[in-house]
Image (cartoon, rainbow, N blue to C red; front, side, top):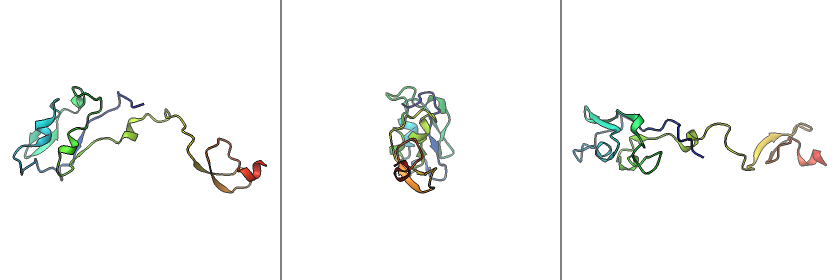
Length: 119
């Protein structure tokens, strides 16, 4: 479950942003229904990060990112949105060392004893 209270706002890489110079209008500034961006000195700037996602249909809106032809807009990764330690174990394999013989092996079990030593 995504943490709705986690900070969520875009980052604009100013070295990539050209203010949509070819079109004459910065697309993200024009598009954002919440007024997160402003246009300053020929570039888009995140001026009101707390407004991001507030008026969109999703809590964590990122609809502006695909509009940027230079890929200058970035959002936190989904993994960053999950609180640490809250994810439930999915039974995925993990590499561990047998506490009896010292052999490294892959397992999804909690005890750190390989199948050979368990016999």
